[in-house]
Image (cartoon, rainbow, N blue to C red; front, side):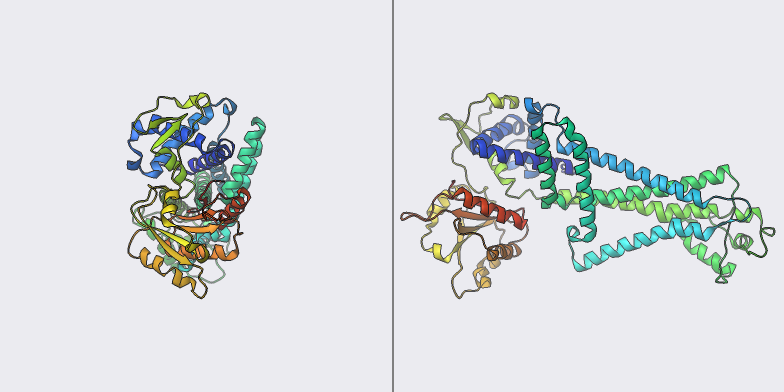
Length: 534
């Protein structure tokens, strides 16, 4: 499934999730459940089969294609430019600008160095230093930076270079948005502005932005080297030009010849005469007090093949290799997207739901729905059956961490029933927060389980009316370090306990506070879920 996703697709996916969140607040979960089930039954299942047999990344990709089609066919959105298309256009424009900028810079630099009046030969050292050594210097710095980052295990997104490039990209998005917003409605402009802000803070998307920027830099370097190479060949072909060398260090011609041979080693076995010989090096040595009378034309023109080859080997080829590396790393980063975030799990659950109740009539999942996607607006409002809070597990256990003050009053069978009978294969409870018991002791059974089995997820029961404190964020981070990056962690919220049960609806304002706190942690596989809907 290589190249199944790209950054533009992820940006559009983020937009549609924002739109769905607004729809959920306005019309409830039932509207989303009906729409996504129809998309799956009418468009995806006939092509790919049962949802359980489809990898999540492919299932979500097909859903995105259908949502794009449906969204753009709606009356209010006709002619709208989706942010993914904006991103593609911006990247294409930036690629052209970076390449042309590098090309023109290379032409200008080489042209200024190759101005020859006929009185004094052009200095080989100056050309080689500015056009070749300067590039090797920056490539060496880049290599040292990467080695240091690997050695210190510093994430790419936490480096200063990443922050600077990220800010430039976001400013570029803002600039392009301002150009396009004149053609958009007020609602469309608001959606796009909110999306750009979300992309800037979205962890999974932000980690991918370094590679497009990295490739833009390489395109600029490729253009620069082609400009230098092309300008040099044009000058040699259409003008009389002479190269010489000189040094105040009293270097002998033999020393310079050995240095030239070492530099030309990468291409000398392919083009054996693409560098000056010892005799030609002696014949092109400039001595100011002697002038040019003793210099031979054949020796003065022997340097340009060496200089052109050096630009290609030490300038152009490394940039091409780095461009290929950037493309490969971006592809790897996209392939590593696990699609295990809680933002995607509700979508997968809605598409794979066992049934949908419409005005009391149950439609089984095995019965294809003939309703075409564009007819959603005319469809009858559906009332979904109670859906499972958690996604179906892969067979591994769920661990439920229950606070000490709630443990005795928390009936496990009732908790499982509220989660949904198909959500969990088994739940193991852990009592935490007991006075005198350290955090490490509470998590000991969880640590042991991660070494012997694959966990389906971790549940953390909490009173929603108690505000989330800093200690809660630290505790969640400790759990994340134990279970790994992709295991889902859900904070299950309950309202104020009643005399009959602790499982009461959550106050919407309390839920909002918890959602903001959990979102600030920046963990894509961490979510807050009300056990009883407010």
